[in-house]
Amino acid sequence: VALGMNSMWSELPSLPDNASSPSTTDTSGTDLEEDTTPRKWNEVFEEKIFVRVGDDDFCVYLAGMAKEPSTVCVMLHGGGHCALSWGLVAENLKKNCGVLAYDARGHGDSKCKDERDLSAQVQVADAAAVVQGAFAHRGQGMPDLVICGHSMGGAIAIRLAASGLLSPSLKGMVIIDV
Image 1 (cartoon, one colour):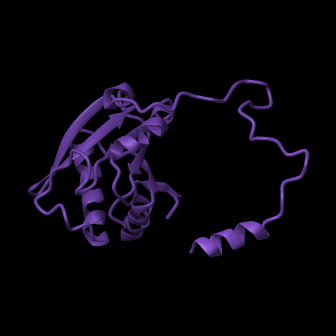
Image 2: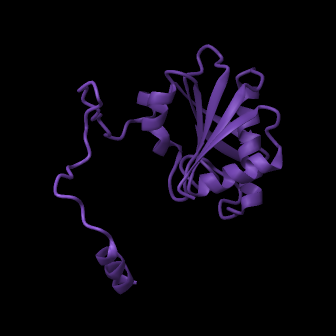
């Protein structure tokens, strides 16, 4: 594999002499660098609740939900990660919409009877039940939803959309690195 990678890199064209590092300022000269230090959950999210699905308790983080937003982004994390991996994204999204991120089965603070069954079928059912349960817990109807998934979460998001379990609320998707 290393030989193949080295060979591939040597075939790429070189950068022109006038190429520079990516800019950290926008066209107005404003500095775009931001602090990417990990945050504690309550520095980004306003609520941490547990949603019971059968015998399982899923840890759910909510942001930007104080006034029942018309659109909520549902964040599905990658394998081996947890909902808090969406912290920096949620910090920016909550200015314009609600954010719901939860720890999938076998991840983070969620506690499930069978933490080893990470099959797509089970995770799709979990995702739909957690989202529906979170809004029921808050005494709200389902708002418009945009599902955002990274890696494993992206694969689950695609299957969740195809399942129709969140219809007609599901209005969009963002899939990253599947």
